[in-house]
Amino acid sequence: MALPTLINRFNALPANLKGAAALMLAAIGFTCMTLLIKLTGAHLHVTQILLVRQIVMIGIVAPTIFRDFPGSLRSDHVGLQFTRLIVATFAMLMGFTAVINLPLADATAIGFAKSFFVTIFAVIILKEVVGLRRWMAVGIGFLGVMFMVQPGTDGFSIYALYSLCGAAAAGVVMVLIRLLTRTEKPVTIMSYHALGIGAIMLVPGIYFWQWPTQTEWIMMGIMGIVTSLAQLTNIHAYKWGEASVMASLDYTRLLYATIIGYLVFGDLPGPYTWIGAAIIITASIYTIRREAKLKKTVTRAPDAKEY
Image (tube, rainbow, N blue to C red; front, top):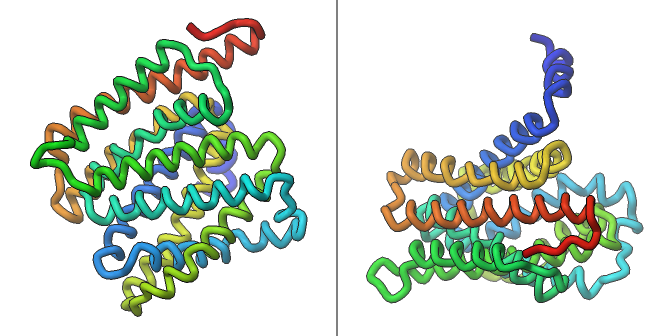
């Protein structure tokens, strides 16, 4: 079947189905990214991996940045942009370190806790009003996190705490992006992210530099390309489909991480991981659906309040 025909058939699909297809591809891409991080992290320092990844990503987004230059870097909230960069760097350092040292499924599942941190920091930073039901979902979600982290037991790993810290920082980043999108253009947010993270990683990346093997060079190059494509596909998924549906489907990454973790490393999640992940995903989906429902209600009745 000719490519134009396939494209036309795809464009004719319902919006949510198109978004779901794109999100599945993005989820596979992000899972492949974490696999490559884990493989290269066995020999290379996490800051070096981040530096090379950002250089590849800068090369990919450079045409977009220069097409609107210097407007792509013109911001009314430079301080907020840099705050986001610092928090995003912390999130990636914590998250990548956890991926390198934990089973893929465990690191992926704990990372889903970011949705609960988004709720908390949206209240603190954006002054959003959150009702009892969503607070209960957040509390139940963190109970699931405790099942996975297992503090005070022999099953506790410091890297599980790293993953949780990374999830918290990622939650802050998502809230800051919400704040920035009120006044900043998407190309400006993207430009600061691509160039800023690369600049921050330059010194530590060089300091911890170990010369990669040919295979590691290839893997880091693929990592940058796959990450860029996954991010772009993810954007299109949310452009085509309803945000609540897309966010719910994103949890398929846990399935992919479990399969790849088993095939490549022979790792299978333990019972506490499965129980904790089930609790986290259920509470997260409830939170996402609840937020979407309230947004629709507010659209119909501006004075409606959450309860």
